[in-house]
Image (tube, rainbow, N blue to C red; front, side, top):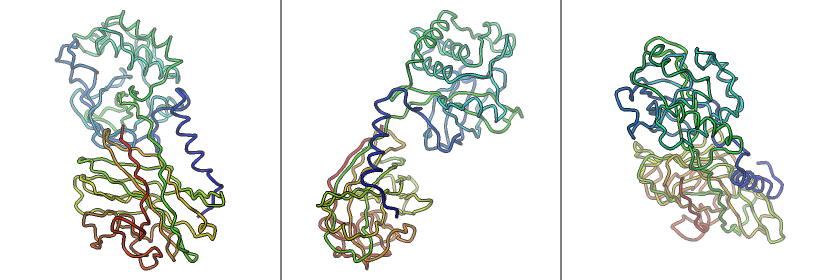
Length: 438
């Protein structure tokens, strides 16, 4: 494993995370990786036709249900809006495979054009080259509707900003065959003017909503393509917390082997959820003032309603642990083997820093880390076979701590099994960190 300059990774991590939190316009608050984000969405396009559009339950034009999610947009039901009145969409409920784009993606219009999408009204003219400023104005409207505005007024303001100019009310009945719909031009004008005046100094933040563009990738059940380009209104993700906890470094000599650094969760969400820890690193602090920092593989813990036997695998440079929704008192999070260096014998502590996120708001987890000496090379994570949990039966009926490298237990220099205190296969546990998903 490559040696890094002291504190370089953690220092950069902290600067990047806290720099984002303190800057209102430094970064896009919603991104997809990979970009665009594939997903499956059921769109009920005209669920509102037979309702009074002044009814309080009509908060949007479409009702969208994400059934197959991605790492950015969780499964769930979201309000939807139209940005493309020229292309058709099935008025009944239909499920589509889509590509999701962020409305703050600087290359958004080019990416949509490459998929064959244009948008706007055929009356009186079209506008298919919207700037980043216009997309931000759209988001401003979603977050700042004027008092008394109906959902159709908001839709009219969106069309005025993206793809416009806005046609008269008669267009929807005469051209599209939609009867009984009309927007208040005063409300539309006020929202548009507010957005144009204020959006340049504003960006969606935690607690706001942001538009995700849905590009449907195949013809609908009516055989039409391209299918109407629409918006999914989703909450802006809140910044994920970055935490650091410390544990002791074993005093044993690893005899040219490895220092096994590992961390686990104590979590019981009681429902389907995924917890992520990314951009993590461990830093050893020695008595002579020297510090050594190493990266830790990204990881995720999947709490699955169908899981009966917990499991753990290392693939593509990432740890994935799967457990039942009830969780466990110890659930393996991540680990890495650091080649032993003679200077480690003078180290007094190890700190573990990571950024935690999860798919379900309100879930609270605790976490701890430990370090233990092994007279073996544990740098190849794919050969370790880590024990995924502590209390659940998981293929290792031996009471080992979560994080035990089962293939290398015979090389442990820290004593016997770990039963809740002292050194062992996982080392002495650190202080406890805690975070709540937002």
